[in-house]
Length: 177
Ligand code: HEM
Ligand code: HEM
Image (cartoon, rainbow, N blue to C red; front, side, top):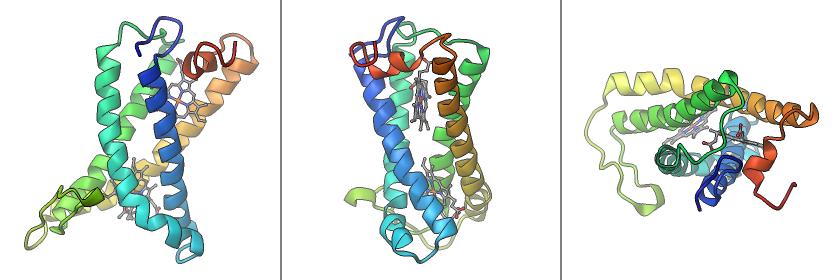
């Protein structure tokens, strides 16, 4: 369950890889919507965008709480850049769905993801919420994708240069050693 100074624990690993899969799904839905509007891909993925996004919002809260709880039982960051990179990933993992949910609330429309009545809806609109969401959600979403690309590139760069195999920390004790 818990991590150590050499490996992330099972909870952290399941959250990391489970969320990475959901993010891949989420970016396919956003990409298809932006680049191939009304295509079969867009029609298949887009109806899942708000649901997957809301699920990711809940999961990142759990992940952050877990990371704080076991902060002294995790592998140490390689350097300052890695620490800042991971912090930026967390900040965007929270901000991207948060501004979308703020916009959803401000629109006044009821929202019941997975049948759970999250937002009851109301008459009218809260303009600053919808404007903020429309201004930032897509922009920060694509910024997150760029950061993820950099994150993955750095992992494999460290592995190839043979200096530090950080992948083994996130994959588990047996798989890569
Ligand atoms: C971490 C989760 C999420 C990611 C990574 C994400 C990513 C994105 C991206 C990159 C776009 C831009 C697509 C384009 O340029 O056309 C977008 C659009 C959109 N997203 Fe999300 N999204 C997430 C969560 C959510 C949530 C929770 C909601 C609503 C409850 C939502 C609703 C929308 C809507 C309505 C659009 C189209 C309008 C716009 O471009 O702002 N998203 N999303
Ligand atoms: C193929 C995709 C991915 C690979 C190979 C990968 C690999 C890794 C590895 C090896 C670590 C440990 C780094 C270290 O200890 O210094 C790590 C940590 C981390 N990764 Fe990824 N990652 C991927 C996708 C993602 C995605 C999509 C996100 C978020 C949007 C993400 C967010 C993080 C964060 C925040 C950490 C810090 C540990 C934590 O709190 O979970 N990763 N990743």
